[in-house]
Length: 239
Image 1 (cartoon, rainbow, N blue to C red):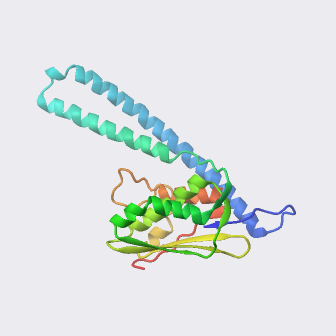
Image 2: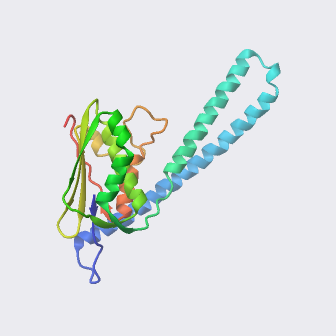
Image 3: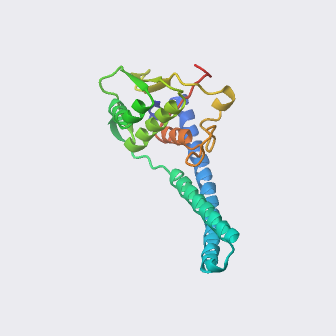
């Protein structure tokens, strides 16, 4: 997790210029993705509403239906409800993120997230090791989205572990005024052909897809780009 300054008043700093270009390009791409997703959600909702209207009409005639027909109506209604719930969940996850920066201590934000996840760590038999190089790691960031980034990354670490595991949480100061947060675990790792796609929207290798849409790491990447930071993910299988 890197936080940096933008171009100075003289326009110096070519790397910062590249970062600003990447941020602007990311925002344009993200808006296109969200617009497309919202259009698809709206189209699916319209069709589900029609299905639900048909179900209501059929239910008025339920006493005259055969047992097989009644079972079919119940099955269609169940599928329709499930589909609508998935659309609503996806819609909630893909809302535009508003970044309003305030001064925050990254160490404190991490501690708050770790406290919220304490019971999950205990249930999974996962130990946490903290290494904070600074007493205070003050940065300008959006508090709630940044905590959500840490929450998503830590949950990914938990899900990558089979049985007992360990997560290390580090904060340090990089060259200049950059603060670095490093989260590492001893999970199963990510295959090289998957690693290059983990920050892509809707990419997932998880088998359970009812509530997982491959949006978690993309959300993290989106927050970091809009916060004038960056997100780097490195992994090897079984390391």
